[in-house]
Length: 236
Image (tube, rainbow, N blue to C red; front, top):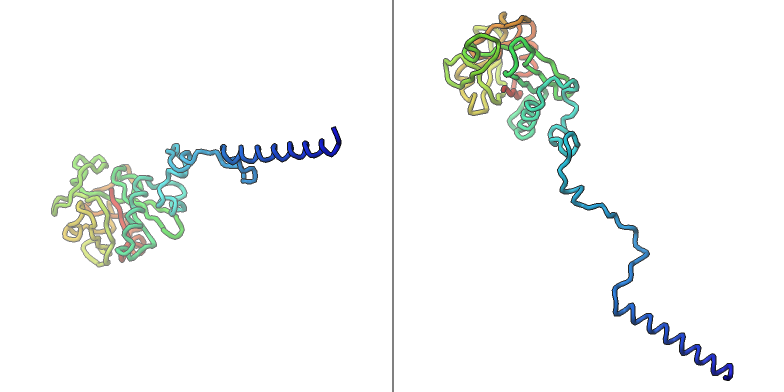
């Protein structure tokens, strides 16, 4: 066979091979795009829908994350702090004095410094002794077990308060409180106020009030001056 004829046959073969390959891919599955970046095969549900383990940052309350600088020594019970901060965040328009928050943990014995003054700027916390109502502790063992919003009950009331104006009365320099909860709405009418009392002093068992969160005579005036005029108090 002549070389020219062989060359023509070879050219026809090459052309036929190219056309067959092209149409085979056009009618079948699409080729992988080898120029695209490698795909992340992590299941998105592992990030978006997972339930984080205990202690994971995902499980932290947003409000606690915002105020994570508060109480570096973890003096305040975390559940009470969380609830107080959530109320503080949701009711900014009601709260005039945003520098301080007070949390009172009536579940603790009255010999403990359970009146927590929280500085919202520095994050520091100072604990003070505080009394509870006489009839909140009927057997006088130092634990408050009963609470009331009823006048003349001689019991402490729980809930959220706003501090109000100062005045001089039976107990000297004092601070009025307005109850914001159904459990303490009669605080002003009941004269539930912050004042100093000589029966609030370092001891195994301190005295009881008529329902007021009375403070140590050595510190009460300073505390009143810091928290007067619209600071939030949460007692529980």
